[in-house]
Image (cartoon, rainbow, N blue to C red):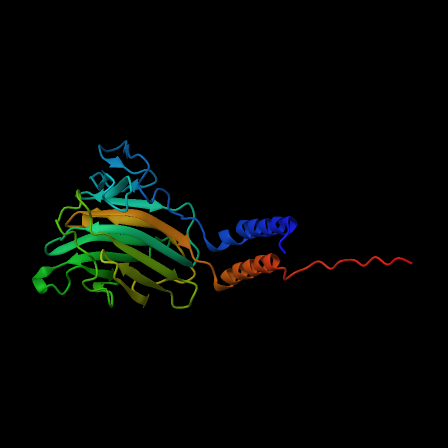
Length: 282
């Protein structure tokens, strides 16, 4: 029988598990204003608007806000790439050696060139450098490829023709063909690697696992400290939104959460019971 006292104890145990265990596993995003919902401001050195918490690294127009509820997942605002420039978002602190990056994006057909250009930066200058390529001149074999840089650009295994292209070739209006990108890194190993998962507008997912392609030499024991968008490396417009960078817990931390939840369950079912003291009357 579940008494009021037991229910109260269950609630207290659950609150303790939430306070001490869940944050260790489900870390908050380290990237500020990754959804571009904060009102954009004019850069004091240029006439171009800049999203808060993002740094303009050129005097050219890198991007502009794209508003309206039909762009990406009903969001109020997203980022529409400009003609040339670069935008950086530097974290307050770098990630741990295990991390996950997520974003939504939509791209126009670049005709015979590249669109989205993205770097995940380490403090040492090493980067996971990715881009989307559209080149129908080769018969469509690299149309919508996701590529990584490692001295040269190479399409990731399994991610050829994986990116959805915007059907009306205008990402500034209308309903977009949105893809979702997830990059997970494991840099506590002697041979660091990352995995890339692309989910296209048709909800088809493909993964390139344990990739070891880096711009500059690979590093271990490091975490990413910034995200960079290179609109000067793009030849067609794209829209990005919902950036997220989180730490991924060590396997032992996840086990700790499981133990805590098991304890809560045992308390709920009466698995732990306080022994009643016997009163002996002489």
